[in-house]
Length: 271
Ligand SMILES: [Zn+2]
Image 1 (cartoon, rainbow, N blue to C red):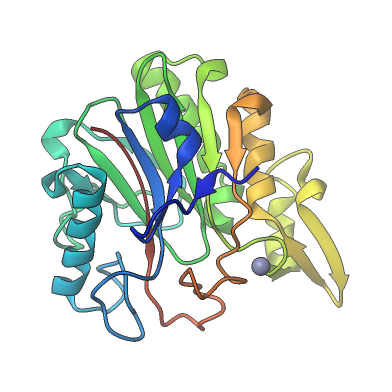
Image 2 (image 1 turned 90 degrees about the vertical axis):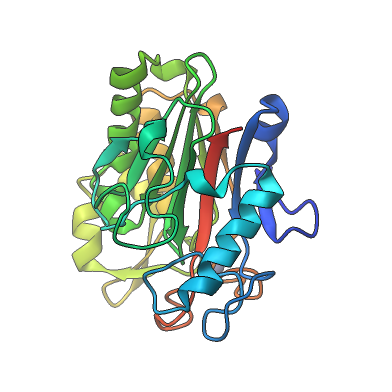
Protein backbone atom coordinates (compact mmCIF):
# COMPACT_ATOMS: atom_id res chain seq x y z
CA UNK A 1 0.00 0.00 0.00
CA UNK A 2 1.26 3.48 -0.82
CA UNK A 3 2.50 5.26 2.30
CA UNK A 4 2.88 8.77 0.84
CA UNK A 5 -0.56 10.18 0.14
CA UNK A 6 -1.47 13.18 -2.02
CA UNK A 7 -4.37 14.29 0.08
CA UNK A 8 -5.06 17.94 -0.68
CA UNK A 9 -3.90 20.82 -2.84
CA UNK A 10 -0.93 21.71 -0.66
CA UNK A 11 1.65 20.31 -3.10
CA UNK A 12 3.03 17.67 -0.79
CA UNK A 13 2.65 14.01 0.01
CA UNK A 14 1.79 13.18 3.59
CA UNK A 15 3.20 10.17 5.43
CA UNK A 16 -0.39 9.53 6.33
CA UNK A 17 -0.10 6.43 8.51
CA UNK A 18 2.39 8.11 10.84
CA UNK A 19 0.57 11.46 10.94
CA UNK A 20 -2.70 9.75 11.78
CA UNK A 21 -1.13 7.53 14.46
CA UNK A 22 0.75 10.48 16.03
CA UNK A 23 -1.28 13.66 15.54
CA UNK A 24 1.49 15.95 16.80
CA UNK A 25 3.86 14.63 14.14
CA UNK A 26 4.40 16.33 10.77
CA UNK A 27 6.03 14.07 8.16
CA UNK A 28 5.99 14.14 4.38
CA UNK A 29 7.58 15.00 1.05
CA UNK A 30 7.03 18.06 -1.12
CA UNK A 31 6.12 18.10 -4.81
CA UNK A 32 7.67 20.27 -7.54
CA UNK A 33 4.53 22.34 -7.98
CA UNK A 34 3.05 25.16 -5.94
CA UNK A 35 6.15 27.27 -5.30
CA UNK A 36 7.67 30.55 -6.46
CA UNK A 37 10.88 29.43 -8.19
CA UNK A 38 11.39 30.05 -11.91
CA UNK A 39 12.64 27.59 -14.55
CA UNK A 40 14.63 25.35 -14.40
CA UNK A 41 13.72 25.23 -10.70
CA UNK A 42 9.99 25.75 -11.20
CA UNK A 43 8.41 25.95 -9.00
CA UNK A 44 8.66 24.47 -5.51
CA UNK A 45 12.44 24.20 -5.13
CA UNK A 46 13.77 23.72 -1.58
CA UNK A 47 17.50 23.60 -2.35
CA UNK A 48 19.57 26.75 -1.75
CA UNK A 49 22.66 25.09 -3.25
CA UNK A 50 21.47 24.57 -6.84
CA UNK A 51 21.67 28.14 -8.20
CA UNK A 52 18.09 29.24 -7.64
CA UNK A 53 17.10 32.69 -6.36
CA UNK A 54 17.47 32.41 -2.53
CA UNK A 55 14.40 34.56 -1.83
CA UNK A 56 12.21 32.16 -3.82
CA UNK A 57 13.62 29.11 -2.04
CA UNK A 58 13.09 30.70 1.37
CA UNK A 59 9.52 31.61 0.40
CA UNK A 60 8.88 27.99 -0.58
CA UNK A 61 10.27 26.80 2.75
CA UNK A 62 8.16 29.29 4.67
CA UNK A 63 5.00 28.19 2.87
CA UNK A 64 5.60 24.56 3.82
CA UNK A 65 6.10 25.50 7.47
CA UNK A 66 2.85 27.45 7.48
CA UNK A 67 0.98 24.53 5.92
CA UNK A 68 2.21 21.99 8.45
CA UNK A 69 1.92 24.30 11.45
CA UNK A 70 5.59 24.55 12.39
CA UNK A 71 7.93 27.51 12.80
CA UNK A 72 10.20 28.40 9.89
CA UNK A 73 12.74 29.51 12.53
CA UNK A 74 13.21 25.82 13.36
CA UNK A 75 13.52 24.56 9.75
CA UNK A 76 16.81 22.67 10.13
CA UNK A 77 18.96 21.26 7.36
CA UNK A 78 22.43 19.97 6.61
CA UNK A 79 24.91 20.34 3.78
CA UNK A 80 24.40 16.93 2.20
CA UNK A 81 27.61 15.25 1.05
CA UNK A 82 26.50 11.68 0.13
CA UNK A 83 28.21 10.34 3.23
CA UNK A 84 26.92 8.25 6.13
CA UNK A 85 27.36 10.60 9.10
CA UNK A 86 24.35 11.46 11.26
CA UNK A 87 24.09 14.19 13.89
CA UNK A 88 21.82 15.00 16.82
CA UNK A 89 19.89 18.26 16.54
CA UNK A 90 18.96 20.04 19.76
CA UNK A 91 16.57 22.97 19.91
CA UNK A 92 19.50 25.38 20.34
CA UNK A 93 20.71 24.41 16.84
CA UNK A 94 17.19 24.33 15.41
CA UNK A 95 16.85 26.46 12.30
CA UNK A 96 20.43 25.91 11.11
CA UNK A 97 20.58 26.32 7.33
CA UNK A 98 17.05 27.69 7.01
CA UNK A 99 18.05 30.86 5.15
CA UNK A 100 21.52 30.10 3.80
CA UNK A 101 23.53 27.10 2.70
CA UNK A 102 26.58 27.91 4.84
CA UNK A 103 25.27 27.93 8.40
CA UNK A 104 23.76 24.44 8.24
CA UNK A 105 23.91 21.79 10.94
CA UNK A 106 27.04 20.43 9.20
CA UNK A 107 28.34 18.32 6.32
CA UNK A 108 26.13 15.33 7.11
CA UNK A 109 23.32 13.34 5.50
CA UNK A 110 21.37 12.34 8.59
CA UNK A 111 19.82 14.23 11.51
CA UNK A 112 17.89 13.09 14.56
CA UNK A 113 16.17 14.72 17.51
CA UNK A 114 13.59 14.07 20.22
CA UNK A 115 12.72 17.71 20.82
CA UNK A 116 9.36 19.21 19.90
CA UNK A 117 9.45 22.18 17.55
CA UNK A 118 12.55 21.09 15.65
CA UNK A 119 11.72 20.47 11.98
CA UNK A 120 14.28 18.29 10.20
CA UNK A 121 14.45 18.73 6.42
CA UNK A 122 16.60 17.30 3.64
CA UNK A 123 16.59 17.72 -0.13
CA UNK A 124 16.10 15.39 -3.08
CA UNK A 125 16.04 14.90 -6.79
CA UNK A 126 16.13 11.06 -7.09
CA UNK A 127 17.94 9.97 -3.90
CA UNK A 128 16.01 8.04 -1.25
CA UNK A 129 14.54 9.85 1.77
CA UNK A 130 14.51 7.65 4.88
CA UNK A 131 12.32 8.55 7.87
CA UNK A 132 12.75 7.12 11.37
CA UNK A 133 10.39 7.22 14.35
CA UNK A 134 10.47 5.65 17.80
CA UNK A 135 7.08 6.29 19.43
CA UNK A 136 8.42 5.15 22.84
CA UNK A 137 11.24 7.70 23.16
CA UNK A 138 9.83 10.21 20.63
CA UNK A 139 13.10 10.05 18.73
CA UNK A 140 12.79 10.96 15.05
CA UNK A 141 15.32 10.96 12.24
CA UNK A 142 15.79 11.77 8.60
CA UNK A 143 18.48 10.39 6.29
CA UNK A 144 19.40 11.20 2.69
CA UNK A 145 20.43 7.99 0.91
CA UNK A 146 21.66 8.07 -2.66
CA UNK A 147 23.63 5.07 -3.83
CA UNK A 148 26.70 6.17 -1.90
CA UNK A 149 24.88 6.71 1.39
CA UNK A 150 22.92 3.50 0.90
CA UNK A 151 25.98 1.29 0.38
CA UNK A 152 27.71 3.14 3.24
CA UNK A 153 24.71 1.97 5.30
CA UNK A 154 23.58 5.36 6.60
CA UNK A 155 20.30 3.68 7.63
CA UNK A 156 22.12 1.36 10.03
CA UNK A 157 24.10 4.29 11.41
CA UNK A 158 20.88 6.18 12.11
CA UNK A 159 19.39 3.20 13.95
CA UNK A 160 22.54 2.91 16.08
CA UNK A 161 22.55 6.63 16.80
CA UNK A 162 18.92 6.56 17.97
CA UNK A 163 19.67 3.66 20.30
CA UNK A 164 22.69 5.44 21.77
CA UNK A 165 21.26 8.95 22.03
CA UNK A 166 17.75 8.17 23.29
CA UNK A 167 17.84 4.57 24.51
CA UNK A 168 15.55 3.49 21.68
CA UNK A 169 14.96 -0.24 21.22
CA UNK A 170 15.42 -1.18 17.57
CA UNK A 171 12.22 -3.23 17.50
CA UNK A 172 10.25 -0.12 18.47
CA UNK A 173 11.64 1.96 15.60
CA UNK A 174 9.47 2.64 12.54
CA UNK A 175 11.05 3.32 9.14
CA UNK A 176 9.46 4.94 6.08
CA UNK A 177 11.11 4.81 2.65
CA UNK A 178 10.02 7.76 0.54
CA UNK A 179 9.76 8.89 -3.10
CA UNK A 180 12.94 8.40 -5.14
CA UNK A 181 14.13 7.07 -8.47
CA UNK A 182 12.84 3.50 -8.66
CA UNK A 183 14.29 0.23 -9.84
CA UNK A 184 12.28 0.89 -13.01
CA UNK A 185 14.53 3.82 -14.00
CA UNK A 186 17.83 3.61 -12.11
CA UNK A 187 20.33 2.01 -14.46
CA UNK A 188 23.87 1.71 -13.09
CA UNK A 189 27.13 0.10 -14.11
CA UNK A 190 29.50 -2.43 -12.57
CA UNK A 191 31.38 0.29 -10.68
CA UNK A 192 28.33 0.85 -8.45
CA UNK A 193 27.21 -2.78 -8.26
CA UNK A 194 30.66 -3.74 -6.98
CA UNK A 195 29.89 -1.66 -3.88
CA UNK A 196 26.28 -2.80 -3.65
CA UNK A 197 27.56 -6.38 -3.19
CA UNK A 198 29.12 -5.32 0.13
CA UNK A 199 26.08 -3.43 1.40
CA UNK A 200 23.90 -6.40 2.30
CA UNK A 201 24.16 -10.21 2.19
CA UNK A 202 20.85 -10.12 0.28
CA UNK A 203 21.92 -7.40 -2.19
CA UNK A 204 20.81 -9.50 -5.18
CA UNK A 205 17.18 -8.83 -4.28
CA UNK A 206 17.76 -5.17 -5.21
CA UNK A 207 19.52 -5.69 -8.56
CA UNK A 208 18.42 -6.86 -12.01
CA UNK A 209 21.05 -7.40 -14.71
CA UNK A 210 19.99 -5.96 -18.09
CA UNK A 211 23.06 -6.88 -20.16
CA UNK A 212 26.13 -5.06 -21.47
CA UNK A 213 27.43 -4.59 -17.93
CA UNK A 214 24.34 -2.61 -16.91
CA UNK A 215 21.98 -3.21 -14.01
CA UNK A 216 18.71 -1.80 -12.69
CA UNK A 217 19.24 -0.92 -9.02
CA UNK A 218 16.34 -0.63 -6.56
CA UNK A 219 17.74 1.57 -3.79
CA UNK A 220 14.49 1.44 -1.82
CA UNK A 221 14.68 -2.35 -1.58
CA UNK A 222 18.38 -2.23 -0.67
CA UNK A 223 17.66 0.20 2.17
CA UNK A 224 14.77 -1.97 3.32
CA UNK A 225 17.07 -5.03 3.43
CA UNK A 226 19.65 -3.12 5.48
CA UNK A 227 17.20 -1.86 8.09
CA UNK A 228 15.67 -5.35 8.50
CA UNK A 229 19.14 -6.83 8.92
CA UNK A 230 19.74 -4.11 11.54
CA UNK A 231 16.76 -5.29 13.60
CA UNK A 232 13.78 -3.25 12.40
CA UNK A 233 10.64 -5.37 12.24
CA UNK A 234 9.24 -5.74 8.70
CA UNK A 235 5.79 -4.76 10.00
CA UNK A 236 7.30 -1.43 11.09
CA UNK A 237 8.43 -0.47 7.59
CA UNK A 238 6.31 1.46 5.12
CA UNK A 239 7.41 2.45 1.63
CA UNK A 240 6.39 4.28 -1.47
CA UNK A 241 5.84 3.34 -5.09
CA UNK A 242 6.36 6.89 -6.41
CA UNK A 243 9.28 7.07 -8.86
CA UNK A 244 10.75 10.56 -9.28
CA UNK A 245 12.06 9.74 -12.77
CA UNK A 246 8.79 8.24 -14.07
CA UNK A 247 6.78 11.17 -12.74
CA UNK A 248 8.56 14.40 -13.65
CA UNK A 249 5.11 15.98 -13.72
CA UNK A 250 5.17 15.68 -9.91
CA UNK A 251 8.85 15.48 -9.00
CA UNK A 252 12.24 16.96 -9.84
CA UNK A 253 14.56 14.27 -11.24
CA UNK A 254 18.31 14.91 -11.39
CA UNK A 255 18.85 12.06 -13.82
CA UNK A 256 15.87 12.68 -16.09
CA UNK A 257 16.54 16.42 -16.26
CA UNK A 258 20.33 16.10 -16.73
CA UNK A 259 21.29 17.74 -13.46
CA UNK A 260 19.78 21.23 -13.83
CA UNK A 261 16.69 21.11 -11.67
CA UNK A 262 15.25 21.82 -8.23
CA UNK A 263 14.98 19.79 -5.06
CA UNK A 264 12.03 18.43 -3.14
CA UNK A 265 12.12 18.38 0.66
CA UNK A 266 11.55 15.52 3.03
CA UNK A 267 10.57 16.70 6.48
CA UNK A 268 9.73 15.37 9.93
CA UNK A 269 9.10 17.13 13.24
CA UNK A 270 7.06 17.10 16.42
CA UNK A 271 4.82 20.16 16.58
ZN1 LIG B 1 10.69 4.94 -12.79
